[in-house]
Image (cartoon, rainbow, N blue to C red):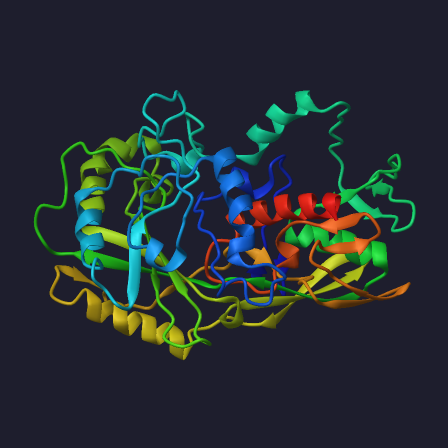
Length: 415
C-alpha cells in the first residue's frame, strides 16, 4: 500500500500474516510499556508464559533481564560468533545500556528435526522451518475443532447486532456467539470503521528505524568456515533516565551473506564468499527502533476503500542523539567504531499499532463507544491484535499481541 506516493505500508495476504516474514524477535513489555493499558506486566505474565510454550523462545538469563525481568525463554540460546561475544562483553557492567542474546521464536534444540543449523538462508525462507510461523500452529489446531472451515476471503464488515460477517464476495456467514478481530492493525481497523460507520479518526503508528554499521578493528573475530544466520544475534537497549524517556531498543546483526547475494547473480557467489566471511568478522549492523511518539504516524480514512495519509513524520530527536552519543562513548577504545556516516532510514518497520487504543471513544452510528479492556466494538465482538495498543514502544509488539489476544479471549469468555 503506497501512502502519499512516497511511503509503503506492507499488508500480508498470506495465511499466517506477517509471521511468514518476520525476524522472530520476542520480548515482553514491562509496566513502562504497559502505561495506559488496563493491565500490568504481572497480569500478563501467565499469558506470556503460555504463548512462549506454543512458539518456543531461544535465549538465556543475561543483561536483558535487568530491565525486562522474566523473558520466558525455554530454548537454548543461539550460538554467538566471536565478534558478537566481544561486543556483548562491553555492556556487562553498563549503567546505561542492557544487552544480551536475542530472544527469538526459533527452534534451537539440537535433538529437534527443525533445529536451526545456521545456514544463513533465513531471509530466503528457512529450509528447516526453524522460525515460528502462526500458520503451522493454526494448521495443527484445525483438526481439533468440532466444526471448522477456513474461508479465504477478505472480511469486509460485521453486523454489530446480528454478529454475522460479510465477505468481499458478498457471502454472509452464520451467526456467531463471539467474533474476535485479528486481521492485523490495518485490516482490523478497516473492518471496524466500515462496520460502525466511521469515515476517519484512527491514527496508526509505524516505529521509525535507523540502521548504521559498527566496525570491528580488533583481533580474533572470526573462525574460518563458521556458519551464521541472518537474524538478530544481540538485543540491547538504552535505559530511560527519566519517567518520560522511552526505552530505546537496538538489534545487532552480522553482515550476513543475503545482503550481497541479493544483488549478485548466483554464478558469482562462490567468488564473493571469502569476502562475505571477512565482512561478517568486521562489520556489525545495528537497527535502532524509535518509540511511537517519535515515529511515523498515519491518519486513516475510509471512503469505500481504506486510505492513509502522513499524520506525523518520524525523525531523530534529542533522545535519539543521546542514545548515539552514549553508545559511541560506551564502545570507545574497545576495538569497535561507529563511522560518522548518514543513518539509513527504513521506509517502514511493519510494526503497526494503536489505531483503536484501549480507553478511546468512537463516534459510531449508534452513539459513543468506549474501547474497554477486552477490546469490545459491539456486543460479543472484540479486537485482539495490535490495533488496541495504548502506544507503540520501540520493543517488538508481536509477543505482546499474541499474549494479549489470549488474555482478551479468556477474559471476554469468563467475564
